[in-house]
Image (tube, rainbow, N blue to C red; front, top):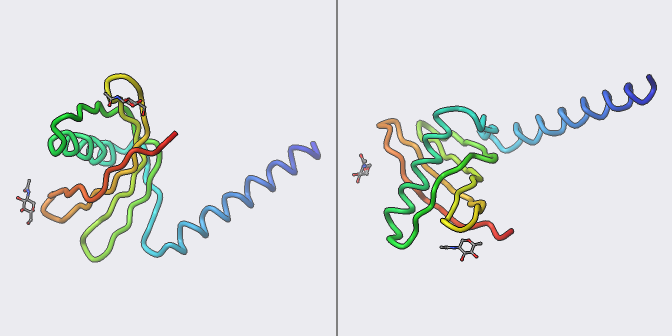
Length: 114
Ligand SMILES: *[C@@H]1O[C@H](CO)[C@@H](O)[C@H](O)[C@H]1NC(C)=O
Ligand SMILES: *[C@@H]1O[C@H](CO)[C@@H](O)[C@H](O)[C@H]1NC(C)=O
């Protein structure tokens, strides 16, 4: 009982810290990795990267985490995603800018060294 109580307090504290961090990076919020819109953006990043690098044939697997920041009516998505390069699954850091016209722009794409 005592132990459960301590765990509960720790969970609450952790949640408070996490919430404060999200608020302090003004306008930024964590994304939901299962949100179809977020998955669409991650897919776009991989497709666009493949288009720009003829030798790259990455296959999108899943979104790992990320945040979105909205400034005026542009939203910037900073995501970590997993993709398979044909021989192994790697993590990539990507940045996609979304404009009101539903026009996405890939602004950053890099392999995260394991
Ligand atoms: C795939 O990624 C692994 C690990 O980063 C790397 O060793 C390998 O060369 C890559 N293969 C291709 C085809 O890019
Ligand atoms: C997105 O917008 C840019 C700049 O306005 C434009 O050059 C590009 O063709 C647009 N892309 C699509 C897919 O609409």
